[in-house]
Length: 262
Image (cartoon, rainbow, N blue to C red; front, side, top):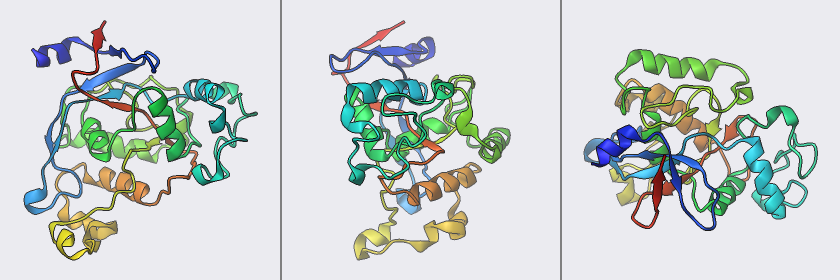
């Protein structure tokens, strides 16, 4: 029955008194091998969760800062955002008119986290993001599809993709759009350290998982693109605000979240 619902429903609405009505996609969980998987611990289980169909836009974030003044660029605590935070805005309340339908960027992890929480949501974890991102338009796991992987790598080479209009790409298997070829996206645990089984015992990280040495343990054809994402995440600090970094929100799947399909 759940599989039938997944195939029939492209969107759903979450009913939450403290949140706006936002279009999200239901991601049916499963097992996958993340980039950092090694040995017996290579497979990771991801539970069912909901993910915003689209990245948060400038229009969305403009509404947020109007309702929550402490996240306006002149009011934000410097600990929570660097000097680039919303630096391209005309003033505290007005984003550039030509960017309203573009993915919001120049926002810190703290601001992205606050936005999601105000919607009754949260940022997706790295595993959730990577799990949803391995889907093509027709397959929930397209990592073995060489053409799909090449298209992702080519999208990373395009200039100024943060200027693309949100929602113009094809939906993937889950009904999610713009996960590749637009902007990098904040995750809840972007700065979580990567550990091996041995490092849990002796407190050391495995240097072989980083930089070019990590390619030795590659598990699938999609790993090069994944290495790029993990390298990007490892370079971030939570107060960074970058031109190429945006976000979308997620939500736990559970009986406490009432869904209305349309």
